[in-house]
Length: 81
Image: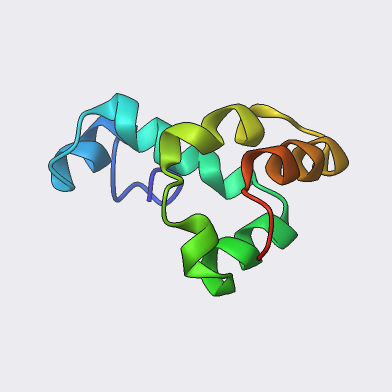
């Protein structure tokens, strides 16, 4: 939206969503999770994922190496039953 001129900046977009800029930045950061983690969040076992929240994922999404993300993700999740 910013690139096409529909919004002047991320603060304006956050306002449209009734958010401040900080939470929108944090949520947008989740787009940098490796595809395998994204797939598990969307299609995975809800019982294993129910206690996770965006806050738990922030450090993982800040890691640029997908293998390091996967290792951190594995430590974050409870073991499979």
